[in-house]
Length: 343
Image 1 (spheres, helix red, strand yellow):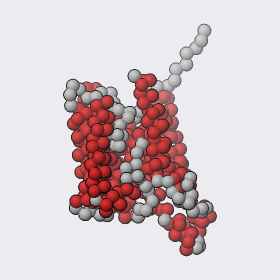
Image 2 (tube, one colour):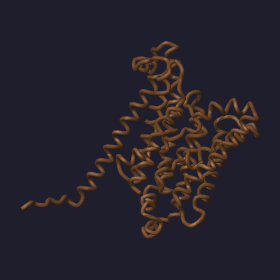
Image 3 (cartoon, one colour):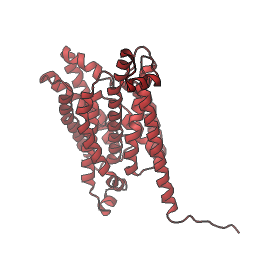
Image 4 (cartoon, rainbow, N blue to C red):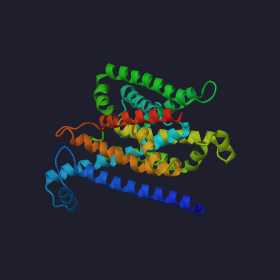
């Protein structure tokens, strides 16, 4: 007669916690490798020895200039990747839609429209001015999409995505009209719109940091609320959560994060879509851990894409926004197929 062995009550929870801890440690190791690769590899060949010489002050001026020029783009890659990945996780949790991300829900387009408007009509320039104009544009776009997606009979995931697509198309048409009618705006916009980490200074990083920190802090506080919201509004309310407050705070946090990243490095697509799917496949659906791991995997993915863009077309560079599009398009198709299978 077969003997049924039961695990102790806390063993399953302990295994889950151990798995999540291992995933976080592995993610940190991958991020460390991405940081090293971002500093070592580029359009000009360097080595770990060259980096060590620069850090000790024994390198020549040419090598020092090359290595130090990679510091700002590496720092921006970490912060922008974190912002986009966490914003995508928040949007998917708030809308309960696995296709949601700032780009698909119009937030990136709103931020871009705010920057173009300020540059064209008020002569705004500089990273700090871009941040302040990106925020209201992104917030307005996010609110409009939520209002349109929630109108009618009930809340529809498809309606949210369609509203974001329509609003993005309208905003990008406006951006095209303004930038083409004003050559000075087009000259600065055409490089920014592709999405790139190069050509930015630490001033951009400094201007981006407060918005990213505020958005990340709100996101970390929303973990339990998002877990409750995933069970449905009525269940979340019964558990003591306030669905309207969780959604509102999640939208604000996602707006702060995505607007900061968009203003700093341009509208980089698909990072906010692909990273949450990767994280869920590794550690499950607990948003407390999803947000933490997304903040680690997002920078790793963006830095890896930037390194690929620098190496694949030496001595020229392929902008990181182009590389993430090549990676993200298959991720979107896989996500759609998984949703169809679940349905």
